[in-house]
Length: 71
Figure (spheres, rainbow, N blue to C red):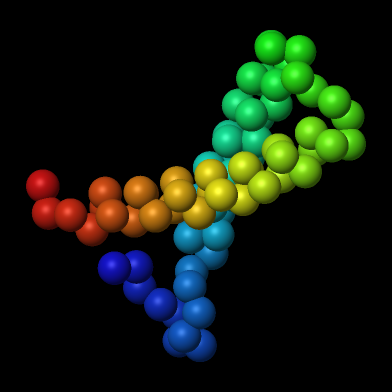
């Protein structure tokens, strides 16, 4: 498990990992929408943001489980 800081919150590293995976997921989603000509302006932005958030959390979860397993 990740170490918690003295105030009981999670470290900045966790937030940066979520941000990295979220941005990567957002760019991939945007690329797929443009590639298949499905990008529709403002309506598509909500899809990109929601998938970016989900991708950030999922990527962080996978990273956390991968780093805590004993290889």
